[in-house]
Image 1 (spheres, rainbow over the protein chains, first blue to last red):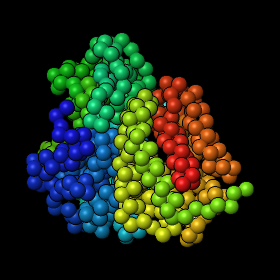
Image 2 (cartoon, rainbow over the protein chains, first blue to last red):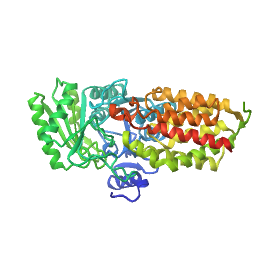
Image 3 (cartoon, rainbow over the protein chains, first blue to last red):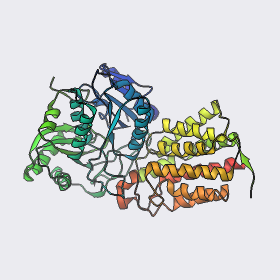
Image 4 (cartoon, rainbow over the protein chains, first blue to last red):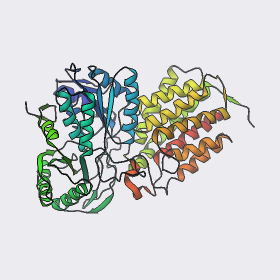
Length: 328
Length: 203
């Protein structure tokens, strides 16, 4: 691994982020990243956070048109409430703060505690829970669907609405709409290695793959022998469409898990598009790349969001962050 | 029936004992977590209880209740994940239930921890049988009314009984049937809590 010692991985990454991006204010000690011009007068602020190891999520999405603040936790571990409150206080202009929370028990509990503490400090807080992963059955017998690729859609679209001056209730409602209209499915071709463990977090022999994985190196629902990109695209797209039959053209995220080359991801995107065409689902916009990652895991995920005209317009709105930047 | 009472020094000894046990067992907790979770339970608890032990050594609170409230607050502030809020709430709520008494009985400790366990259940939304820390904590606080040794044994039996269960809460629940056959890491760390409690009570 390209690290100094496992204990300083997150802090080292933040120091590097600060060095590369003077347009961000990075508090390495407190682990809070905010846009330098925060708080922006009159603007609703978006704060997200989660375990580290999913970069560029979330700190790489801080900037005009997306997040105002992000709190990275330890690798694959939710940040703590004090970080979130600190971030909220740093970005709140008085117009309120939206917490974007991925649906994992740890993230949910810590953001819940943070929301209470922030409200005690007089900050108006709303929360949106992202739970797009169809590999998890949403039932009383699970912690509910995981938040994965749709987080990027939520942060971009709600962020654009906030940038345009929409009030908190409106930004929150748009974020929920994106969640309702988004679904994802992930596949691992290799396990990932956490710095603390120093090796793979589960045993996935070459020649096999895991269908329905999350983004924390947790094993998936089913193991199979290796499949072609075309076969994987069919499984992933059908899993998504089984759950959500989009009535609008979709935003498509073909996401890399961190260890798969872009050449392969683009090839996979061609297969995903082939399958979507065959299923008569029109694609309005496509994003291909490593955006919601799982350290060095090889693999990919497919996320679609049924985008009505307003969501599409907000998706196209200008954004200027380290990892997503267009339209200015 | 024992009439012995336990003060702040006992509570500090307990927390120090947990810190030492977590340090010793971190690798095992992480390995259990790797099987059905995300391989960080040991490292996270180690970080949290090390912060607790350091703070208690620097400025030991005057009552057992205050020791537990301080420890719980620090776990919430340093651990993250689900285990930070859950263990933090357990100790904070138990500490608050103990009030300002300088010395408490084992029965009072059992009542306080029962209040803590109830708060953990409310926060996490789990019940015994879901393959979580509650499977060790719930029988342990019940058995604590009998003796410290019984509490430890009950925690161990509870943790062992998670092996055949299918997880219904937390990250292991994503695995569905594949979570069966693995021991729950949270229930396993809960055993350390009660093992350290027994040792602290022995003096």
